[in-house]
Image (cartoon, rainbow over all chains, first blue to last red):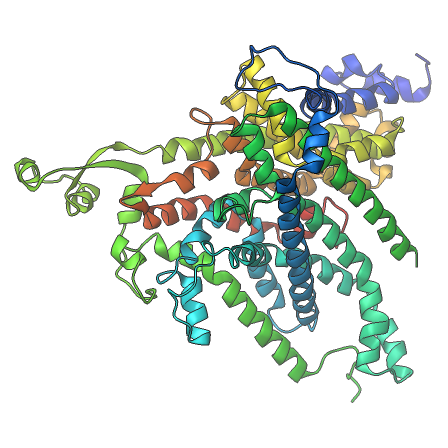
Length: 315
Length: 313
């Protein structure tokens, strides 16, 4: 080590445990700090991913670990992509994704816009609105089955109170045509605040002077909304959609507790379907291929979307 | 007219916006209010039609939550000595006797152990990694950061297959250690991204001054940077804790007994003829209220936490 004045001062300061490692260069410290994290992620994420890829070419079944494992090439992938049930699952997922995002964006943006009118006490109400999103989806989802009970459930009672329909005449969870909407409603209830918070940040990032300038130019409120507010919030909104899209593509806990995929399989989203294949039918090789397909889908869609998002941001 | 600002909404606009938002808030909070109140209802009141807003509070749900009970015949009940405690009396009124404690306490404790264990580990490792990413030239930095983030895109069920096999081989299935390691790995991406953001905001000059004063890198890190980042570290910790606390998919697949946490357990609380809703609500209340309190404490950092630091305010 060199003998610069700094080093001499450093030597004069009380030595501690750190002194023993003070010889380490910044580079060494950087690696020392980063490696445990990378190692953990390799062990719990990448190694399993590689294992999954490997399994996806086999006919392995985890409930029969001693049976001989055959490599069957791409047959698992072939079977999944030609399986009609999986396409039904994908349709259910698409329905869920589209409508949850639609309602969450609509309600979330409206709420954010209203909160940004800066009425008295808006901070308090914002915090209260956010509460559902922070709670355990499984526990809350399970309780919603109680709210959805025909007759005694609060939801059915509320609907009958507003519309006059007999509360025991419809079953949100038990009915094939209503069940897909029952999960959309609960997910919207839970996650609208998320979109709202991000939109609110977007709205608050618009500097006042832009509106002042528009006012001087005598632009109408309507015009200001479409030419200033919407374009400036759009990148934030798109980010919110990205987050919700990824999360809802992975959706498991809330829906499994609400409907368990039923009735029949009308609310069987991909994650629930995958769980059945992997942990109930124990088709491990098959479901590994399924998992890889899902991962590639999310990753591919997200990458395309992020590119679009960056373009919007650049404008 | 001097104080008039053209960007300030009018009083009427404010009133209308306020009314609409408050109306939404009340509707959206109803399910939560219903959880809190159902916990204090008697089984009859809980399933009454029309749904009861006013009712005589009862602790039966909480008693049922923490006990297992067996039905006894009226003759046997007669023969028993007088109930010694208020909760025994509640149970006796239903022609039952307390057979023992329920598993709720254990499951709740598991949630606490696994939640705090994984939070501590992920914040500890995350702080180190975030500091390195924030201050040093780490090769392939952007790739590594993206890699850390991308681990969050995989559906938990997809990762669960090999992890299930791995845990089985290593003997980690249904253990606290296994769940702590797993949740740490899931949480660490959030921790690194959030903490890096917080550390980027601490001026480098502080450390540089400390280094010139003769501190080593390590001393500068824990005597200068850590205290500055304390708020950020605390809020990151709460986010990690809430995630582990709420997690369900891994918990239901990888734990069944010893290490089972509360979320897979609460929906299995069964009474006579289906779920015992007051007991479920009581269990949910005890489980959800801490998160509500933390959310209110966190409100300033909420946005940052839920968006991985992508949006700051």
